Image (cartoon, rainbow, N blue to C red; front, top):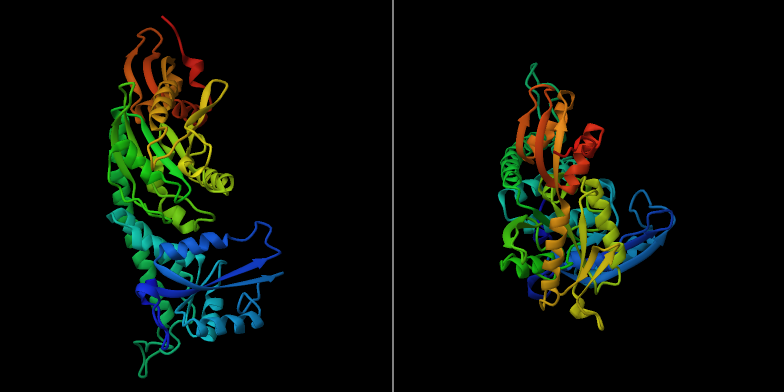
Length: 442
């Protein structure tokens, strides 16, 4: 996938500071029961990609038009806007088919992309680690594979190698598909190697039984700023979408004396492209395997409840729905009348209101985390009969076993285990029983 910086037309001029000028198109489809995308969010995405938004075109349709997605009259209006503001790029806030992209590009005389392509380009700009770059490349390759439709008609066919005059040979399209497929295979294999190394590091943390606290939340909620404040780090943080892609880990000693590991991960967004969710699944495993999940929410955003629901949906998709969590309402310095405080349900902390920018409420947050860490770690003494070998195997796999011995008469395994509450439920569900059924006292 080419960079957005490579866009251009014969007459197009760059915007301020050399930024690429673009026109945003928001088409509301009344038959879309899930609702349309957020235009304000598309503008933020464009600005995060260092684009200059020159104009916005709004329209409303009952159904997408097969050729252009929007009606022919709106296409003429879009073409006039592109020429008037010398735009080099048009971004639709709706998913476009390859044919619709080509048809719109031919009519407007500039490159046309959809929201998914814009997000992929932002990820490509921001990925810093080797794993992050591989994950983004894999998502881009899979997206590009769906765009290989009649892209090389000027070559038509390559000559084959049999007979006096040569046979029909392969189409350039087929050659490109095979090259893409080979590259997808190579990147997938390399990512698997990286995943194995990451899994080794994760098991090492589990073996040391150091609680892992994962920061999750909607993009631009202030996760990296909070991470830097708590751990005295210098992770890149900016007022833009997807400022952080690659996971970062730091140790921190809590006021209670317990040592924990904080993990800062990629932010979520509405309808995050499925290929990106799949590509970053290994990275997001840190969220799934966390002892406690800190769901950071921008308290100053009027859409905070909707954004939080979107994050919950992605957490369910990656298998982190059962991880114990604490809601952290951030940016209270931007909300008049709100002071740092904690909310509880039946005595258990549910939410903490803080400001990562000013540091207000962070001492309270650390106290609440210390309290939850103590509550979320379960210590059990188990008597496992020989038939419960799978439970024993899962406990050893997670490095949760403190001591182990065997009853010589019955053959039962006597174990003392220490594990997070989330893993207690996960192992029980996996093995079809409750670990509490095997507890015993001396």
